[in-house]
Length: 209
Image 1 (cartoon, one colour):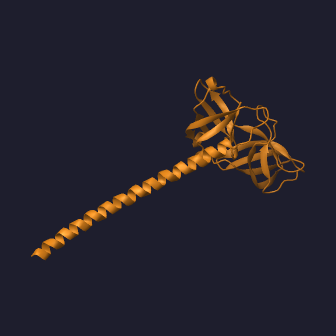
Image 2 (cartoon, one colour):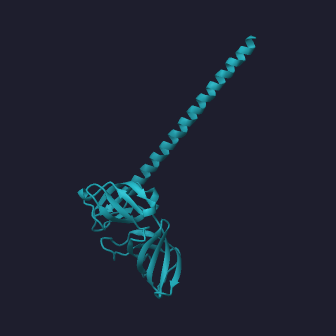
């Protein structure tokens, strides 16, 4: 009889130990997730701090407080009190994210380069450069259009700002050409560009003032 009750006690102890180990494993997994997120946050901040200055501009660090993918828009936690004005470029280490659309006292709205409503002067990083106008089509598709029909373009060419748009300095990276085709309606060429920036992952940005 003693062995029977001893077995029950041992079984109960093992069950309790099993629950404790599972609890510890869950806590360890949660800790690893938090450490991983903290590490990624540190990497993002380091990359932001390493962003080279743009000639003739002042940089204002800003937190992204909201993102609206279907509107190709995000909200920043800085506004006119901090010197933010409509038209100012918003950048990250990967390149151009968008431009300030509207600004209140302590917040502002950014129209992302993925928006069809934002048109930016752009050019290819080649010699001689090929210039055109770039607009958004979706989160992963930008269109470079009104490029001269005889222009030399290749898949893989890097695209950056040309400096021909108001308040936008030249040389800010935008993306990479993934497709080139003729546009007979306008007698020009068009390019599909894959953006450098992953808009949904943005947490901190710079506003160029």
